Image (cartoon, rainbow over all chains, first blue to last red; front, side, top):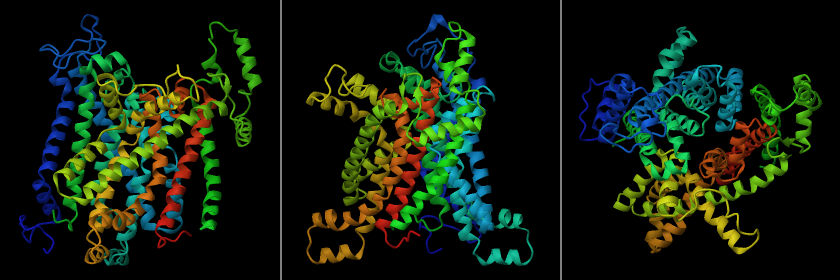
Length: 297
Length: 321
């Protein structure tokens, strides 16, 4: 273990995953971020059990109240509790982020590994198609597609499908380039020569060896997609206004009097967004470090 | 080199053709047409609306409509905006000026800030200053630009009152005067800062890492041994080498400024093409929508082309063929 740092003792029996885990656990910032992210995920998804306030009910008597013991973060212009909406909003924002990341990573890896493994005509066709998708200005087409599909599929899923459709290109390119380099190794030739089927070579031999790149890409995507969802909802092209999400909550900052005089309505979702994205980024950095056997940090 | 550029530009034509088909199909799939956005159905005779539809050719088969649209488009006739009641080309021209001004200001601010911070952090790595800049960069990369925009308006416009929160110019001033241009500049600073935030952070980080890496190289040791001053080493020897990879980012900047403009202009109600695009989607103004979507797509293609060409220009080892 020439490259391993002195303060981390690796035993010879440890698998690369165990070593990566140990390195990741030593990274304080990444560990704190992981705990925070888990906390956010848990309280967001348990929102219906934590709070009992009805999020859809408009309460005329209690509009725009500043934070108090009744409403921890105050109420918005329709008299809805900001704290409750923050939890439910996190649910939607995180769900969009997780679903899009899952779809994009699966589809991108599929296209990338097929193109990289088979090469030739298949590679050419798939990559030209990828280029074609990458050439669309992302935000422009998401807005247009969302306007078309709005109302045909239920709320949040429109957004998830539309964003996924337009963002798998980058992942496909990365996976392809990694597979291209990896498939030149002898163990792949050995597997092919004993008659292993192509699907099995890709799934059992190639993908496990490029998975670290895919994991790092997934964390980047996750953070990016949460931001994209929020930005679109802020512009009113995202999830429907009736569904609370962090972006939707922030769009109330479009009204000057809310922005200026009622910061409790828009600052909580803004901070939630920033801290969540920041912690995902820290986790990503930590994973990148932990999964790279050459890094000595 | 020229051959490569020519081939790439020719290669863009089929891509643009495919994109135009997609844009047309999408516009046709959008709910309603230009007439349903323009006319109040309660006030107008439905027979008249049908006549207008027939006259404007909305009832023709799709391929004929497409053919008409694309041939007009190539000849520079983008149709008329139903909302602004004027030719789309004039409308876009008017707004484009503002967007270009915003984009260039954003680039200038980005370069200025990232060079100052990057060189500072790169010269004194692992000091307090470097760590502060590093932390600021982390925030810059993590904060979505619209959140940054909202905070910027809150602090700079409402609390401190230094910058205006909307518009591109003080409308009481007359075009052409000195005050007019100063007011324009005053209005552009905040949106440009927000628009350039992400690239400022990544440029700074990149420049810092590159300067640190270069400062360990042999040519720096040689320069030191010959007694060159530290200042000259950093500002001439190292910086020249570190700027090169940065230049290639310019192509991607075109792409990110385009999509960034949509969000930034909406937050600051800055009258550019990004805001025009958002309005055109909201008001079913299809002529504007289609022209702008085509324009954004062209810009992305051009941006990617510029990035590829610059790669070859700054690093002759990458052969363009």
